Image (cartoon, rainbow, N blue to C red; front, side, top):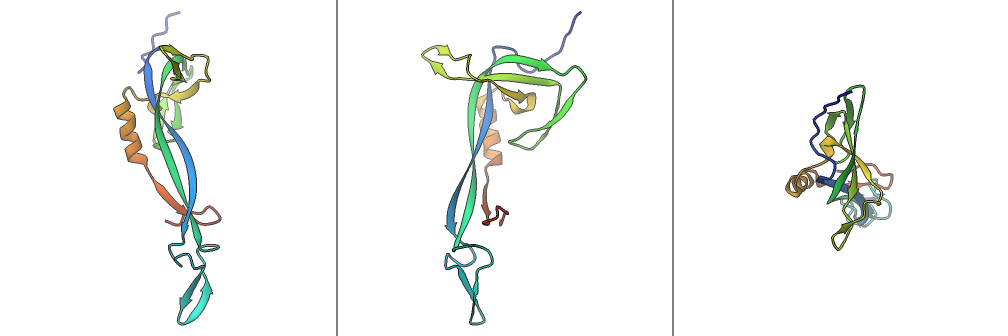
Length: 151
């Protein structure tokens, strides 16, 4: 049997990917200024937008990491459609890579570390390409106490 499938990356290649994390912090309510009340026509009301005069801001942090391709899996029955968790772009591919993040000690890489699975569209050949993706997706979102987006 002869299988010839062209892949963007090969085993042993260094690739870059974007890692996402989320944090929350509180800010004074943008409607009542942190007073927990609003005055309309000389009548005081409880602020309908917050609880306790605070709103939460959700900040997504993006970090570019590198790793080594340690395995390549090919879907036998054609392309699959996936969604990139960072850019939310649709990815049509039949190639799934196992990438071991770089955790170097001197010149030695920990290849026994847990590898992660990434589709071809989630990997970048250069750090500059990955950094450009991070610049395009940076967001700060204000949410209410129920986790609903305010703005």
